Length: 107
Length: 154
Image (cartoon, each protein chain N blue to C red):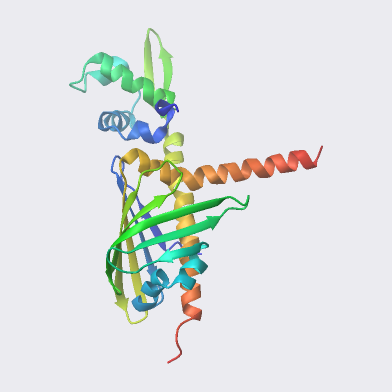
């Protein structure tokens, strides 16, 4: 199982969530991103690699530097994951409600 | 149709909440969780055992469209009529760890009630895995339909 490409795994880490927040408004180079954190540069690189592998970030070559962009489309996909689960329960509960309504003792 | 069921799963946490308001009295909502025939109807499962008491346990068996049987079981820790059920939940042979479920039943008005399910997982990874299940299932269904369509059109 490749956990690294798992979007949920990617966003479960607080540093990676902070990186996503940072990049939500602007594209930045790896160096500029790392300067916002106390963690070592290789640690931040590792986080960027994971976020890029699961497509939450996209890389763009800009001169000699690589810039990281946030990919909102992928984030939307995360929100969409929950929707089928919610619908599954919604259907079950609708059934429960309909069934109990028909079984309600007449007053 | 408006969506009455809400699912809250905060990032990085190992729990999730499912809430739903019903247009039935709380006594009927609770009944739907403790009466064998009713549980079988709305959960679409066979109820093999359901002991509604502290130290009691339950065992459900569901047959999927392919004819495979899946068993679900758990232990009941707390059972207070029209108020709460605390129980564990295990999907047998799924490789997924046991979950802890707190079910709270609330009376809103004479004819309205609310259910809150708090589910606690071994880790947030397992929570996310469960959340994605219907999603993956949906994808598989789409794949199966596509395969069916392709094999029929040969």
